[in-house]
Length: 85
Image (cartoon, rainbow, N blue to C red):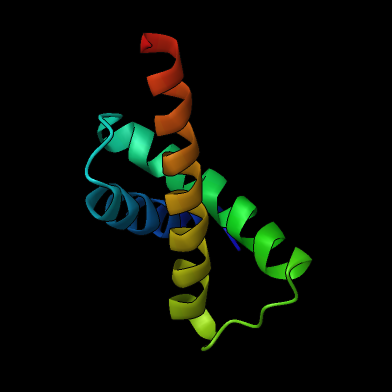
C-alpha cells in the first residue's frame, strides 16, 4: 500500500471504529493513527486466527482495518478506565 492509500484507509477505518465504539475522544489525527494501527492489528488477528476476508480490494482492507481499530479502541478504553478507577 502506498502512503496516501494507507492514510485514507486509516482515516476511514478510524472514523468508523470511533463511531462504532462510541467515540473515545482522540480527534481526527488520533482516529487516523488508530485506523492505521488497527490495519496492522487486524491483519495480524485475521492471520493468527486463520480467518479469510469476505471480500477483496480496498473494501476488504478497510474492513480488516476497521475490525483491528475496534479491537484497539476497546483495549484503549479498558486501559483508560483502569487508570481512572
